[in-house]
Image (cartoon, rainbow, N blue to C red; front, side, top):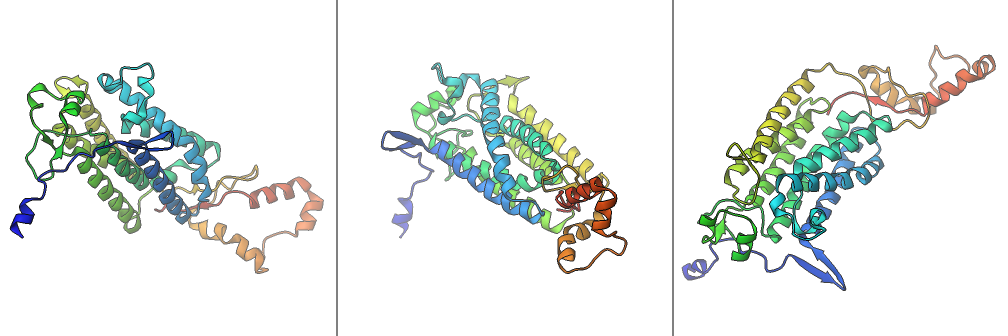
Length: 345
């Protein structure tokens, strides 16, 4: 028994391949990881958005905009902050399949495009941001598996049992310091981030169910929590990076965004409670002035109509139409408008 245990590897081996073929098509595990992660993020967000009273199909619409924006933003950030890692070919700045998506750049551009799309549809952005926050962390965690197959995103040399084996050719390509080239195993930074992302996602879901988190609150905690982890990660990573004042550039970004996220969360929680819109308006007149306490009445209005119960103060529809046809049309538009619900998580 002891002999069998001694035979176990004392490190995490590197995968022998980073892609496979289906006919002439080459599938990279890095890209596949992000595809799976994005799919899971969409499914999770659909479920959470439905729980807020929104139309889950809206998530698909938003995904068509934010996913390409996230990839473009992530690649731009990577090209700017780690120019030495760009492949030396004419299409190198676009070669995302070889690795290289900056999370912060991707989230920033995707958030801007998503907010624009939601605003255009007449939907309040804050509640949607809360719904998507845990899903983003799950997508990032799955995406980190691709870093394992690409033999990248590793940290300082280590002799720990979970040290990651990096072949010599990848050590050279990774731009690590020359004095570390003779080491064979390194801190698996990608694995640490994967675990942290899933744990933080679970915490945000739990917090949303057990505390009253106002719009933007969970998203702000996502920004603060992920960035706080990156402060730690930047202290152990030795791969190629741009430096400023002796520190990795991403260290400054991580510190700044951690502070921004914490302040953002505090401000969001202190903001007065206001109604918000979760469904796109299908007609011109949207219900915008409904108080939060009246949300149940708004959502249950169709049921009251079906049961035959009428508002005592409501005028006869036919008489109203005869008196003012435009008023009746406006009322019909209001009936088709978006429901306004309480700003609770």
